[in-house]
Length: 340
Ligand code: ADE
Ligand code: ZN
Image (cartoon, rainbow, N blue to C red; front, side, top):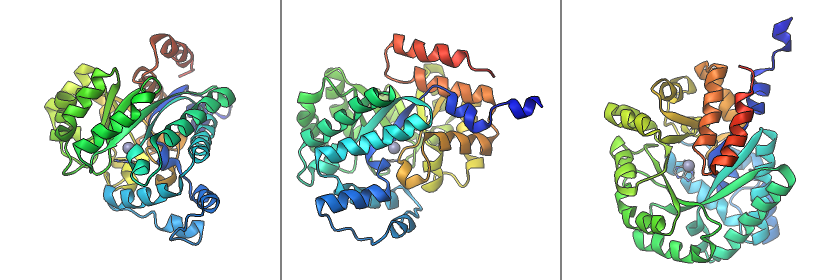
């Protein structure tokens, strides 16, 4: 009898106050929205139907995905598009029980095709403000440099962001990892830190542990995106645990991009066992088949995570966020009151 009264795993996870710390807003562009935006902006797509788009989402590595992701982003043209995109994401997050999100955006994907930085930033900020009003969700904006482009382009992007730096919390580093090590961006990250920005970087998704060392030592990141391959290096894993570094882990992304052979083989549980502060995130949910709750649920099922471990993951997402101590404490009080 008691069992039937216990919340289902999905209800339990959904009720956990949790933050999403690794979400590319351009990666939340659903195929249906792609067609809507294409229609209203008169952009011609190389697909005729939503089914055709979804069929193209078969990836064997990161670059397969990136090629199609940059193509999809071309339908985004106006401030309204960016606002609508962001608000649709936050609606999904609210349904999943998310309370806070720190969203990445890739300005160079847009400025490179003539969309002004201000159009992108104003649209996203409007979506974030609407999410606060409509869903009570707080959020932060993180500007990502595209690492397949050069250092000058990253500096130019930081300069374009100058009027917005009071509304941008941090900078990140994304796109094609292998061949584009963090070292390439050490100076622009230093400049960002000098401007008071927080620092994050994708490292150890496909790239070797050496890239994770560089993200720590040369970029001085506050948080690490993915970090899976750090576990190949015991000294590095020990350092991540000892420093309390937060890792923004993305189970369904890793599965779709063949970073792991199966969810059962995913390192998330090992990270927790080793004392690494892992979190669960969706990365590019429209492309990888699941939003925040799905990522928790699928990982929990495949790895047989306990409710205490799920609470720990949610806790890590709050303490690893860039929220101030008071806001974190508010969420942690609720989390601590969750039945285990
Ligand atoms: N850009 C969007 N998603 C990404 C990912 N998972 N890795 C690197 N760059 C990205
Ligand atoms: Zn990512």
